[in-house]
Length: 196
Image 1 (cartoon, helix red, strand yellow):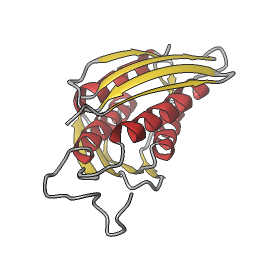
Image 2 (image 1 turned 90 degrees about the horizontal axis):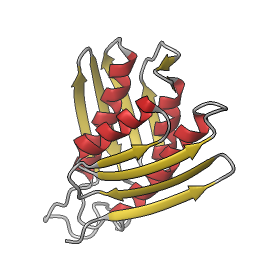
Image 3 (image 1 turned 90 degrees about the vertical axis):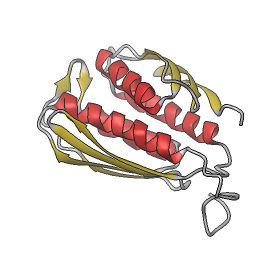
Image 4 (image 1 turned 30 degrees about the horizontal axis):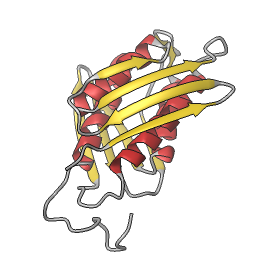
């Protein structure tokens, strides 16, 4: 099978983004968003999902992190959607309960073509590094809608905001890796409708 890849660019008055994604990679990451903690999260996503991800985002960080984080979610979601292609033969669903020190995070997703985000993470600090914690939800919301996926994130335990957010990114990586795997028993797409 050929590698499933996508290249996406998005240029607005607020951000300029170039992204390259290989779903069948080895976990290599080259990430530059201008937000150190966000770079760390995206590197973890690539490594633990075994995706190759190159990302260069220039955003209006003199305002705040909102446009940079949200638009990166939009572009990554679009890249996932394009790289997956017609979804023939893929498992479609993925889930992971991931421990990250004190945090225990569930990510469950469905590459169904219908966007939805269910968010149940309890973040009680304004920032982790220079990353505003409220932007974690904005990223996952943008990703789910642009990627046209049903995405659930739930926190079972945890008090350290760094660990909770990192657990969410790593759980997403593992769940997405599971969902994009091929199963030779599946003919066409895994849907009674015949399409996703």
